[in-house]
Image 1 (cartoon, one colour):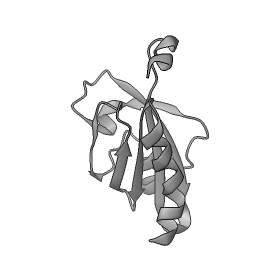
Image 2 (cartoon, one colour):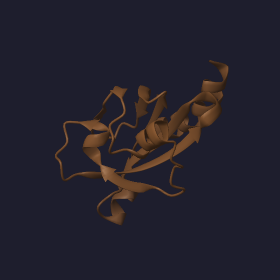
Image 3 (cartoon, helix red, strand yellow):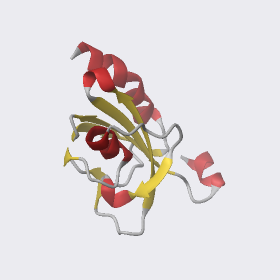
Image 4 (cartoon, helix red, strand yellow):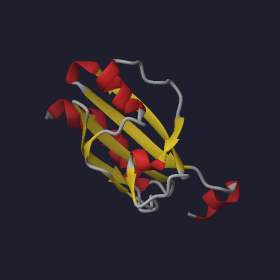
Length: 118
């Protein structure tokens, strides 16, 4: 338990303090164990098995390396109550020795000036 806290605490703190639309998700052995979202992140995260449209899923099932940069994915892959056209960014980091992936999900603002009015 100590290692999990050490790895995730900074990400959780950022999500708690930001006005950006973001969430941090911890997956273990192919299942979402928990998540934290910012006040502005509009969706609930799906708990349970990861869906095949996520990069985290590819890591657990096919042993694929995770992309080094954020990738657009269908919001349906992670979130409840979204349409099939909505996209979010997924940035995942693997901890193979713990069989865990920590994922940062975020929705960029449509217009840059929105970030000044958090």
